[in-house]
Image (cartoon, rainbow, N blue to C red; front, side, top):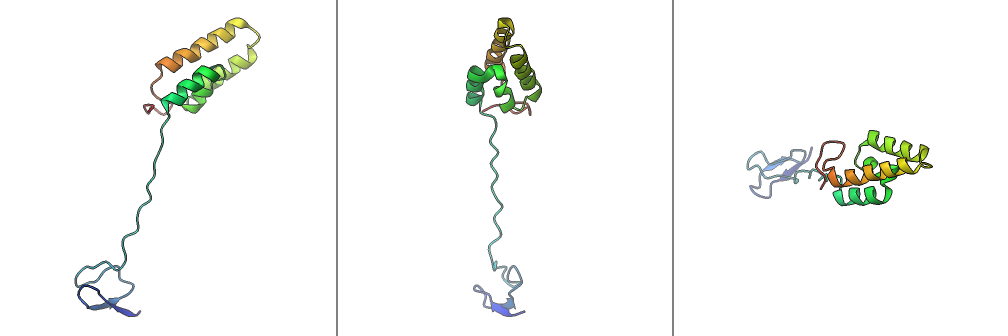
Length: 110
């Protein structure tokens, strides 16, 4: 355990110590904590996905509303040959694009 001199008070102390015991001068700067940025659901993308791919439920998959997304996808795939079902799912997607303000996790869309 070698001793080093403190740059502030010139006192000898162990190199394994985080700071000088006399004056408190830090031997090494504290480790920086990583910055974590969590991006929420973007409302603009949600609306565009609802308008262009709403019949397949893409916008609800994006917003973590999996139950609605699966229902829209199944209705579209199974009943795509009927005009009425396609119109109903398309209207449903457009209404969701206009009215939904929070994602499936309860967070407000930015």
